[in-house]
Amino acid sequence: MNRGAELTVTREQLWLIHDLIFLDGEAEAVARTFPLSREFTERILRLLAEAEDGGFSTVSLTLDPEEAFRLALILKSTHRDGAGQSVRPLILACIRVALGLGDDGPAGDGVWVDDEQLRRWLS
Image (cartoon, rainbow, N blue to C red; front, top):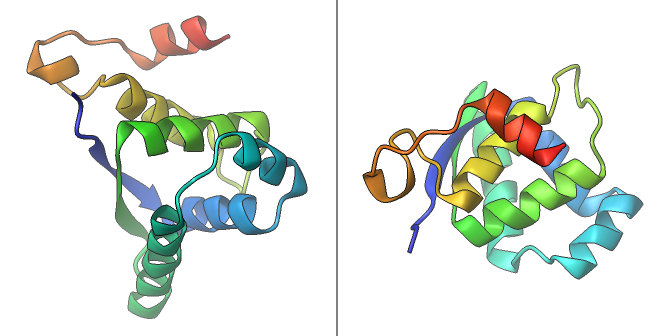
């Protein structure tokens, strides 16, 4: 079973995730169907505080496959640009984690799907 992955996310992407989880009515409806855990939302708040207090432009967000899948659904269902940065790369990164498509493929077996192939499959 895939144990998840660590993603590098920008502070703007973290704020977008925060706003979708806590402020967006459309995302709230999706989140009721595919809820994110309390631990996940607390992790987002903690990372935001660390990024803001430390002045970091990026932070590492660790996602397990289920969290990644749920977050990708929320982001995709409410797709829009946040803080001038497209969410598409974040959606693709979440989908990679959810499907176990890491840098060296699922379970390190060398299977690789590039972003263009992934976009075609998802469209």
